[in-house]
Image (cartoon, rainbow, N blue to C red; front, top):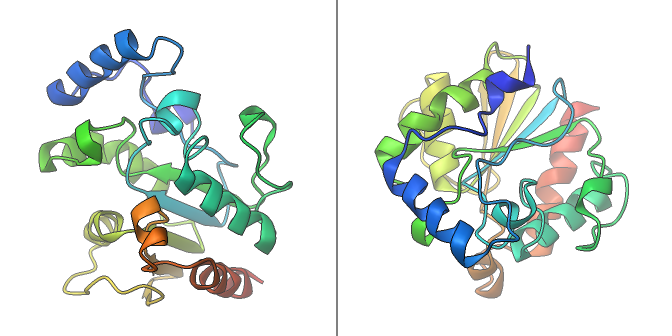
Length: 208
């Protein structure tokens, strides 16, 4: 399947987000400021699904999760578990290689105030669906309640509430819930390094 199915750099389906990106191109001219592609091998057994690129993270660097607090927290954990080939540093984003792991977002563009409208989630859903279907991933990790809700809806899983560390099964795929590694969640102790590490160690065990 062509990578273009997962990503359209010229997408302008969402008026509010498109307007926000135009403002950011003037405000931050050195930033990427466009829809951000997924990263990692196409046929990885593990798919991690976040919310959207951070304004000063993926939106700035053009690479999902790279450049902000959430990215540093996530990638250092992935390195410790063995899903990233070298320890994270903000200096050279393009040099990283994910190992049997692919990372995407519910929405490819940074939204105003980091909040998505239901219409924006719907507009971007075809790109996420292309990454999930046909169900070939052995594990999907949903970072946060929005990711949980969207992925579960796509897979036809109903009535299951979000809970960090909870595991769901659909056919041969396991879906893990995780709190999003946002600065707020980490600083308030909602998500700790130990909690995220334990979850990804469990993921690696299930993939072995």
